[in-house]
Structures are given as structure tokens and as C-alpha cells.
Length: 238
Image (cartoon, rainbow, N blue to C red; front, side):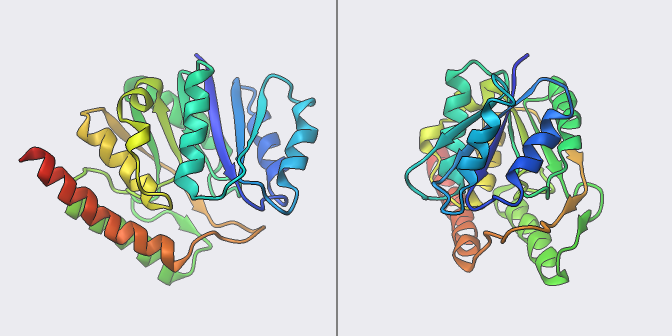
């Protein structure tokens, strides 16, 4: 089975070489696609230097526009489908997602359609975040679960494994949310298609290098995007 880890980047020069090495060191046939949004810090150049080192295992796609995390992932998902991958993973470049958890997500996906590296399925497993951000993230997931009715504890998680058929059937071109709301919409659409979703407990550790991409606009999009998803779901049902 072909496995691809999609890693979107923007100004991740401090992390990208290390995260690629960490995944390759697993020696479990994970391939990597870095989707770089034309980072001005030279992230893509670092990846280019590694393409020969990991020939046939690491790939780079540079987009000329920076229009949100969701658009970068969709670009990567379409690339994965075009190149015949069976399992496609979302993972951050900053080590907030531990590469050593990739095999756990993959194994769990053998009996599921989507597996989520979950911070909240077994209590709260977050390291190095300020308490305010922990509470914001935790209650945001509670809010999403309540409004959309999805039986998922960590609805905003960005460490995910999809089976190929999920990405083929949920309608990637219909995904509207671009920031972290994209993570919510992907899970909601997967749930509405009656795919099996499993949460795998992980420990999430905040980045130690580089800058966070979280902003008030991203939070606002997710907040109102959830209400819009609910409204459209009601309209479609009627």
C-alpha cells in the first residue's frame, strides 16, 4: 500500500529538513509531499536539496499563491490521488505532530476510513501551550461537536490519515473553508458520507522553532464556518 504524508509549509526553514529526516528514519515506506506556498525564507530550496537524498520518496510542489491551509492540503490531496497513493496523511512541519505516531494512524486506518491523531479523546494531551489556547482549542472542539453533531472529540485536529476512497468521494472541490476551519469541514463531510472515523490518542507538543500561523481571522472563519456548514446541512436535508 502506498502511503503519502502531505506537509504544507510557509516559512518553515527551521523545521523542514528535520521533519523530513524523522519521517524517513521510520523506514516504513512513507513518502512525503511538501506543499510550499512560495516561502520567502527559502523553505523550498532546502527541500530541493533533499530530493536527491531521498529520491523517489520525497517530493516538492511549490504553489504561487498563499490562500490558506485548506487550499494547500487540497492541492496535496489531488496530487496524491493522481499518483496512486492508497493512504494520505496530514501532518504539520513543526513537530507538533510526532512522526513516530504515523504508524499508529496507519494501522488504525486498516479498520477505518479516517483516523485522527486526537488531543482530546483521552483527556487533554497538549504540551507547551498557554492555558488560554488549550481552553480555546478544547472548547472549540466541543462547540463543533455540539453544533454539527459529529461524534469526534478533536474536531480541529490536523494530524489525520485518510483512505483513498474518502478523498475520492467527499468532493474536494466543494471544500470552502481555508484555515483551520478546513479541518472541521473535512471531518464533517467524511462523517456525513458515513465513513468510519477512529480517534487515536496522541500527545500534541507546541512548536519550538518558527512562528505559529494562528490568527484571529482563522478563528473567526472556523466559528462562523461551522454555522454555515450546519445551515447548508439543514437545507440539503429539507
